[in-house]
Image (cartoon, rainbow, N blue to C red):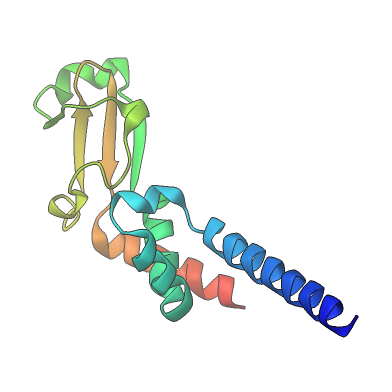
Amino acid sequence: MTQKYLTKALLICFLLLGSYAFAQQSNIDQRLLKRFTASELSKMQTSEPARLAYWTYYLDHSFQIMDIPTEKASGLTDLPVLAMSSANFNAFSIQLDTYQKDGATLRFQGEQRMLLVKPMKQLTEEFNTYYQSEQR
């Protein structure tokens, strides 16, 4: 009878640990898998949570997609063109790093939409403010 309880207890522990591990893994933004492996993200989650928080923040705050105002469209024809749809854009779809030193404005090919890339200094300051407020 003792072995039966021990077996059940071990099974319950195994299930609880497995569900805990799955829950922790599911907190990771799946868009990060375009740049990092699942193993790297898991390691970041346990040993470098600030780095994981940064990259998650980066995905949502390093750029802005907006419509090109009709009255300004003729003045924005010289913008560099991105050969992709704004609907499918992910911050890791292109090397934003090349545009982030000073910030940039790019246009989506075949659309009246543009991508505004924040300067790295601004993004870093915004992240630091956000992260510090989250830690309180």
